[in-house]
Image (tube, rainbow, N blue to C red; front, side):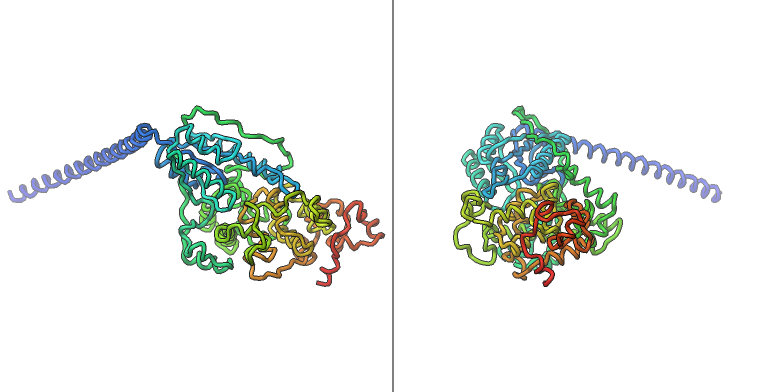
Length: 539
């Protein structure tokens, strides 16, 4: 009988265990369904509350785009979308950047203008993909932003923080007019790899030598993660968007503007061609597309974020390889940061002839203008301006210089090695005001960035952040080291194609017989050199 009871008890226990297991599974499933239902309903409630709050308060934010022409990693766009779904983006073509320079050329050249227009067009397309759009206006921002904010009844204006004088002057007027109308403007720092608030020093205590800055930052600061692209935007404005200006399409352009093109270039350079791993070895070359990243083109207008590039580098290091080349691209991004912080520290001194090294003898004109009130050819400068024109147009009779200047004219780009050489030649060999060269680069370079451009020219001129004030580039030595076979020179100066490699960089010394033999007549087919090239042989 006891055995029978034990058997029955065992059956009952097993039944209970099975039933308990079934009940537990039912409860788990039910709990999972309830949790998922609650999450879904909570998400719907949150989205409804956001929408109702926006509608109830008529909260609108006018997002003023400037040198930040992207939707990825855009703090102002992201923070605005957290407050309201009615974020109204606007871009203004300021006519001042298209004026003629005192030196007689356009402040913004044709290729740079075309790249900018393409970038704005692509920004509009990408905003449309996230249910927004882009208002475009032509005129002075200090007039348009307050008026537009009033017209659409925006509560606030969000924009990127700029740090050089022309932009600061505009910002001050905009802010004052908005304040008078009872509106606020909020500035966002979003142009550098390291956020200014995360630096281990105040900007006024920024080290005057880059290496000291780099060491402190790399040891003591962290790079912030990228911001997500919003998905909750709506665009209900009925005011005119205005068509983006167009230019006659230059079919010879190599580079196209826009966020999509910048990201495509990164994908191509990193992931398709796998070139990041050799960046440090190839970056000083001059011929071709892939010896360097070319990211500066899209960084200049903010089409691509430096933090996005950084995160992709880290992904590459994790998935492909980590070496000196992968670090070196981060190193170059840090140089870019440094020039921006230097400009913030020294203000208008970066535009003075004396640079950071001394006090100017006379006040600088407003902003980045050069101290010339009339075109220099009529300004009593004698033979200086014609010499500058030869440099500008690539007609110096020095092949390495001329090839680089021809490339700049044709493409809107020049290698870092080329920039150093042509700048040194203008300042040290021709003894011409370095600011003339900086102004020409501002006109022609697609990747023109006010801080990097003027900072680099200060550096080469010996009045910036270079501990070697007497730095000099021997052009013959540079040509031999970086274009030993003359391939770069012959590509951009086809009239020298028959000159032997060993003579290509000293073509100005060819005898009459050699000129005839190689099919080039000095002073006819190619200019006579405007400097004594023999000094580089002695050097």
